[in-house]
Image 1 (cartoon, rainbow, N blue to C red):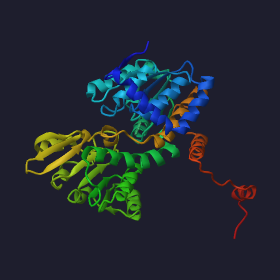
Image 2 (image 1 turned 60 degrees about the vertical axis):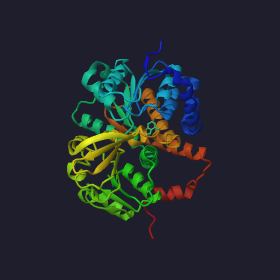
Image 3 (image 1 turned 45 degrees about the vertical axis):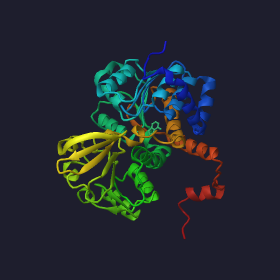
Image 4 (image 1 turned 90 degrees about the vertical axis):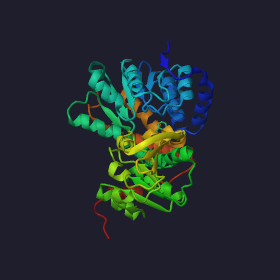
Length: 419
Ligand code: ADE
């Protein structure tokens, strides 16, 4: 018997079509899925997942069930669930607790349902499941074979847990695989963030001043795409001098947020930290400035400051909240400051999630195959799996590359060759 709470099971057929579309664009994961289905490589496993419930996640979940696992899933953000996909997953035999527009209480209730299924392996995006397991379900956590983590923010939370000596099971930081962060964080977020901003506002980026807070892989992708869409100025703010220098050498203006705040038409946060945009910045922004967040949590644009500076607010379009400040200026907050790409659009395109979720699938198989041999710590994805995914992705794109000759291999191993 499948257990679930979703918005409307009647949306399942529409969700199944969406999943079919994603499958077409995720050839690496589909290949791994077909191979693993034969030997039912995950038979007997209960897998608990807290992920954005999207068509791409559905392709991963179907790979897990085809390989024999029983899957329990909740959404990893109250605004990111695609309700038709959630319904379709129920029809596929998955236990689903997710709907778009969950309250904070409902969000955690859904995650608890996953924890209470006593999963053998857990997949998380942002570490809310890992943290609940470690805080409130210690008995369940101590029996878990291992877990994975999809995102930068989740990996830093898990590293903090490890440093505090509290980590209960090994975790593979899928985020840190090259075939994940170089593509998903950069090109995936770069494109999907603008997809969200544009679907919400339909503004023209050409001619605008775009301010990007944070120049990690996500910020790099957003700045790159802002330039590609014709922004008149792309300004980067940073706290890390190396990243700031990278931004300068990549051809962007760099300055503190206090200065950038006066200039921007569109602000996009991608720092992974709290209060990247706060009272002192909001106070000097231009009338009509648009604020969006691409980081995991809705803490980067400090909404309590916006609320306290405002005399009124109203929803002017779906996903656009207009704040009228006491001095009459209007600021526009997108998607309640939550991940704009998943709330106002569909998240990263399938082609890039193909690699991210192929990493997840291989990490889970690795944990299963090596159970009890993997030390309890935060691990990087084994390098051979990263290479395998890159190779498969190139193959599916019809791209071939050179191989080292035996002479070149010898040369690389030698210390004696000089000028
Ligand atoms: N994170 C970003 N984009 C995503 C997507 N399309 N599916 C699942 N998780 C995501």
